[in-house]
Image (cartoon, rainbow, N blue to C red):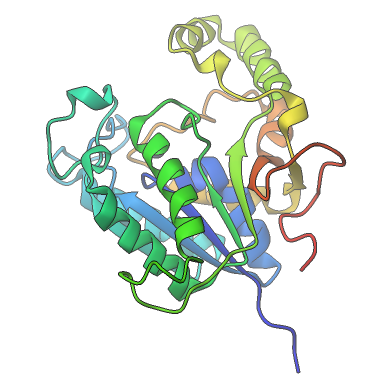
Length: 279
Ligand SMILES: [Zn+2]
């Protein structure tokens, strides 16, 4: 009997998070025969529109959903699952008064949706955004918390509301960037575009990342760099954070993906080079 197909769920907040944050991981595992699913909480309706795009505030959700689906196809995603919330925008959570905004989502309903998705897809590994959202965006923080909670609830036999058979994925990872890589990125930007470096510092981007010794897995994804770049190019309505990346930094920032591991909690030791170690 052939071995059972490995399954990966990547859970994010907005169209482009899957590509800007996890594009290489998705393409890498899809190419290796893993069944990859992407859950996306919103259609990114509140994103800033790039000058290169014809999207309007009215059409942006539709445009970004199409960009997400196009990128997903290029990366080899089996299915995109939209959770149906609205983008909360780049403001503090307490300033979001739209009841449909993801940050205001009813927690019980959100758990039913996410838990049912995990029970249906039955992933071995789940990847989501880090607890601080990576960029501090309120929707990133919410999807990180919600995915972490749903990961545990999906296995709970007493949690019957979502229906479906209980399922316990084996590992939960957060997408991260090691501080040394972030610093090297900042130094390189400083050299080629000091104005951009100042903007990044003022926006607090230079503070992103975690201490290098918190990294539990480091995946060489250099072979899918071309696919990743094609997927990034699908998101024309958004300015790519990699536009300002000096060419010599591309392999370092886009050729390796880094993760911390929440479940089972990583307590140090050898950094793994594969999210599916043990399968
Ligand atoms: Zn986002």
